Length: 370
Image (cartoon, rainbow, N blue to C red; front, top):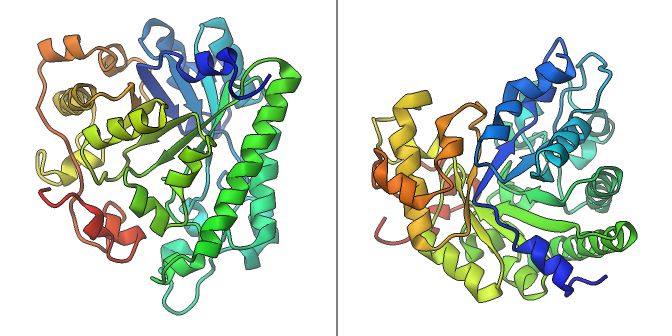
């Protein structure tokens, strides 16, 4: 089997009108629940929802909790089993970098053992950056590849998602406000080629496709500034589907849909609750639960109208949430109460909800009339 077979194309273009990202916190609780309790936290009720795919972020070396007590089940394995029993697609989602453990007493063992391969705290470095990995180091790239390979080969997942939005930094040069070099971009492209070759080999062995998804920000030039040569990756066919939208987005959904058409791959619009208050919706307060349903509906409807292939939710975890039975259908959303919005960015450049926080001068990538 090769990447050009009808089998692979069918998997690539599978219907994904609604994707739910689960960041794995349901498997990181203390004390550990039973398997039924684990599934009830975020998953079981999805059987009655319109969610087509679950992207599950199990613990990896980039971020996790080393102090959790042992449990007698594997959360990702249980998610795979549930999805197979409920005709849902499942991807393993890996955070390509993560800063959350910068404030923890301990981090994952591999990071503890390789502190000199982290961003570290030096003059001019923001405090939040120190625990992230530096992709300029060969050992880091090898570890990332090995981690992705272990999940792809060890679980019956339909694909891998490389989540660059959590968090959007790959090199120390970027953190210091210096330009990422072409040599650094080439290192990331070589890593992507390795991952593509690996997934192809696993697909051949198991007799079914292993897809690659990316989650990143929605401007090719902005990604390039961070070391992600997205245009080249798409030209080389290294990716099967792409999702954009997180703390902020840079361009209209119509541009994202056009990129998918240009490279013949499905594109998805990510809705994240913290982007709505930055657009001035109900002030600067994060609105949760029923109160922000109209905002979510309106944002999803804007994306559908622009021509995306589906909606992707992040940081929305109540499996009984009515949105998981609404966001898949633009005709339904038209009839429901909604706010006609398309949110982009706000705040100031010292805040990580802003594109200038991750890339020096990053607000220049915002569309002019926003």
